[in-house]
Image (cartoon, rainbow, N blue to C red; front, side):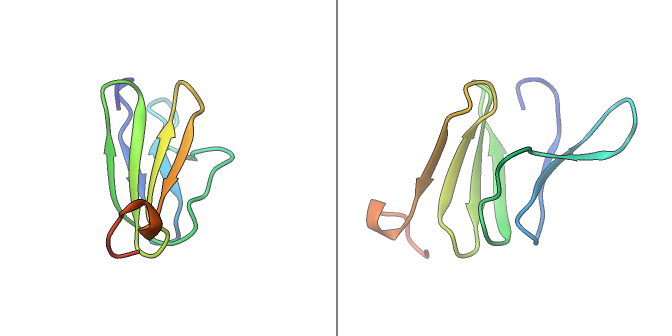
Length: 79
């Protein structure tokens, strides 16, 4: 991400990053997309785009706190 963190999505639907100081995996607080994460990418403005197996596409604004969720009714295929 724009702050240098490496984010990882899990099959359990969690998003975590490795804390550089402790090496511990730190979960993204207060958010769970519901469903295994299949793809994850960060944008330059501090957001994560998260594609799930069954719960559509999500956007998480790491700096802004913004949360968006797109499913079949918004035109996301495969949900």
